[in-house]
Image (cartoon, rainbow, N blue to C red):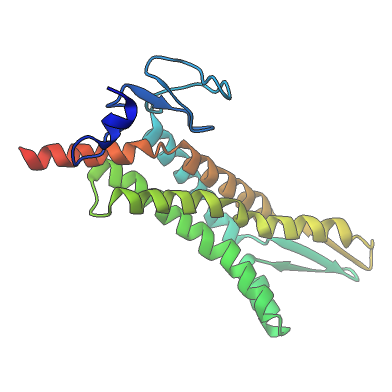
Length: 218
């Protein structure tokens, strides 16, 4: 029986594993079960990523822990005529509001607060749903996973702004801008959260649905 016949036979969808196939996570190419490397991109093949959820929770926990000092400590150290000012993420956004830069303040808060917090909840929800089950459909959870992966890189906007300002504003005694300790914590938090999302194997979503179906049939 061909793969297409397997996929369309019956009312239930057939997964790649049930059809004795494995999909490459890099390029999406299907290969016979047991093949260790993708023929197209030569990436390593595995039916399921080993210890996927353990790595997801480990990276996510590290990201959440580092996000706390990223909001407590100053992101920017601004020196003007010998005096130094320190600005946190939220404090910098409030100053932008005072200067009338409402749109820039919104972008800073959205990219540095809303997106990271939403990613923490989304990744945690996906991992929890695989372990404990969820009423959300598999397609909804896949959409949530894809959105989480897509928006992850935009959390680095704050770090890019700090890097640009540090490079441009270096006028010695008159004025200078340097990154604060929060910049390092924030960058590491974003990186760890991205690694957490990449460690999640979305194929586990469909495994959890199959497990729920088997329990319902008993």
